[in-house]
Length: 345
Image (cartoon, rainbow, N blue to C red):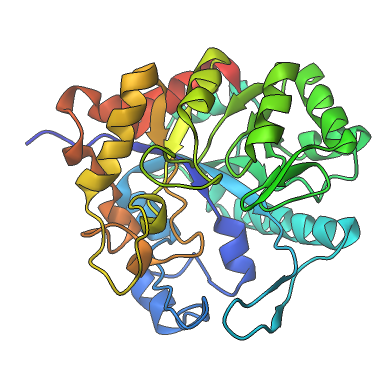
């Protein structure tokens, strides 16, 4: 029996889930028994899928762990104001709380924060089953950053990948909130370019994306499916996909059902892994299989109920490989992200 490929995942909200009350050090059954998010998300359950044990069982050796700050928003059903930041100071506080979670996990031996290309190589080259999970820090939404002069503070702590937007930020238009790079955003992207940092184009509105592309910053899309199959500025157009490839970047495939099948609702049957594979096939037709990887975003606000059919826990993620051509299993599982990390990180 052929051994399953090990995994690199380009997008997981590990610290954010911990700050929401999920203890990822527990077994999955223990976490689900006491999960504070099981009955949230506007009345829809979020059955947890990710723990350190589940990541290990899936064969994950390295993941991109996010530093994510939640802006204040309104519940679309009740109209109630949901907690979140309203200014840079609030966003920075959340960002530092995320960072503290990762540092505490590292002190406890659950993870190893990888701050440089050399650290990534050493982690992968010396990996054993007893090794902690390797974590590359990715900031999702740049509002914790004061301005371009504040970048070295975050780089010193391991942040080498930054997504300027989630929804609209002080830097850029984002998901469902169109707009270009602001003046502050232009300065941030130029400084990222000068420091050889990588921009994450996921969540970035079209206008802001093309502003950044013109600057020439190195870019990836850590967790983005194709707009050809699902409408909306959260997803990538074919032109964006080609631009990311021309900048030497990678694209991570998202396991969120509403990003897989146009118009999907929780009352409907869950999309299949073949439906997700259709996004991979479309991308491969544009830029080849060598720039595709995983960016599952599992437990990024949708849980098992919002994941493809047969994906009940994170250890089920390798099942996706069966839906794509066998000759690409290893590279999509880890090989393409590994090459990018060794060459570009």
